[in-house]
Image 1 (cartoon, rainbow, N blue to C red):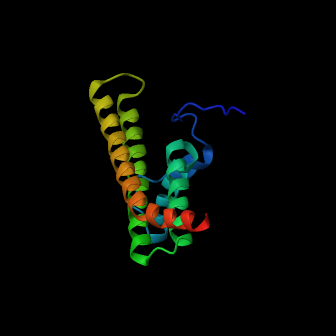
Image 2: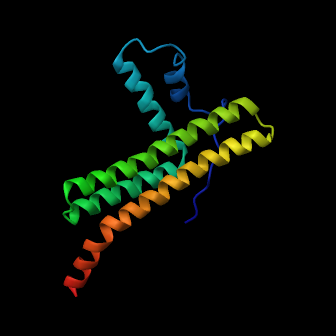
Length: 151
């Protein structure tokens, strides 16, 4: 079953719900709850529109679940959680930078826009590779022990 990939959203194609939520987002939030609402809208937008963000959320959930299943120490689970969280943060920043660059250059090509987008994507890649290294270091030894003991 193949899945159709939709083009990136434009100002005209954003769902009206997102547009309505963000209508007054240029204003300073009147209270902390409104600030959290805007933050959640950004996370929701990224989850709904960014395939890589959804992949990172899934892998993060899997890594933490596996950490708990393998009875890692609390500090090891925390380290996996922090590195996974940093990947999600980098993916959110990448989405923000890409959106801002698209807003600035519209539908035209500019070498500096390419550099900004490529560097933001590179930052996500570096953080993801570090997270894989950390997860492999902490998860593989007890996983190997579990597999060998099951044989």
